[in-house]
Image (cartoon, rainbow, N blue to C red; front, side, top):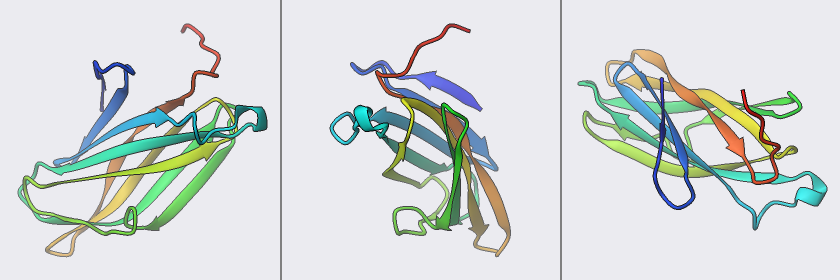
Length: 143
């Protein structure tokens, strides 16, 4: 798993994991216009790019997310596909989508996996890298 930093104006961060030649890169961002900090509601969007760098055609069947806020409360989300789709990726193809998650604290973390299937019918799981959800309201600490 690698963590890289983009160089755009918002200093967006992206996180990448590769499992079985499937590269998953996630770029989260805080949505101030949809958040209500006075009501402990912080909304984040995240854009995911899934790239098939392997030799097999694969299909994304289901997703599993663990969303943990700064107080350690964890919500698990499971469901078929992503954004209403179960994309099939041939070698060299990619699929990008954006979704979102609200949490009750100014910061948190998300991690998960995609359940995938090869054309030959072999199931396997692909890691979604852990990534930070950080709003400007988060208390910064040095480690």
